[in-house]
Length: 121
Image 1 (tube, helix red, strand yellow):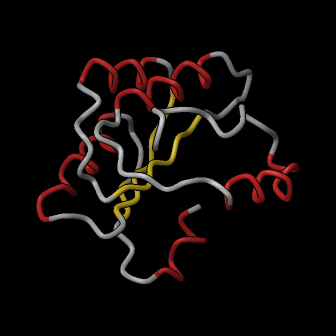
Image 2: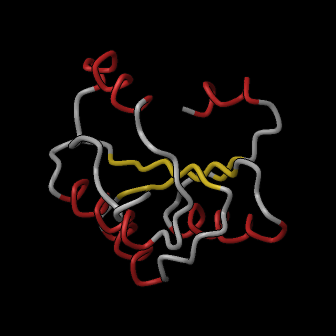
Image 3: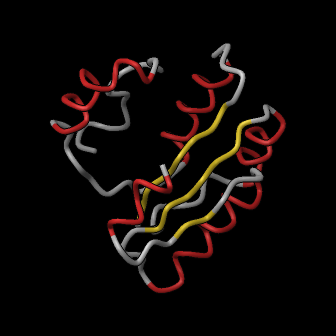
């Protein structure tokens, strides 16, 4: 994302989806160099949330640098699972996506048809 990693909006109830969808649809798409900074923001926000279930979904081609095992352990220790969705992955980049999901007791997905995405979310 140009200008660094940042939130589009804070954690928000799903009932506000129509307003959030407009914000999401205006977002700039970029190629992250590393999962770490964005995942750290998500970890901090989810740890401070009073939600009973805490889950992150990462959609990526899998080529950003690893967030590191220490961060993944912090997600697990905090009871936050991560699902990873590999979209147009590059060669062996799917292994990192699989590792992130496995280390946090989440799921890994590699849809071959865009129609599969709503079922994942």
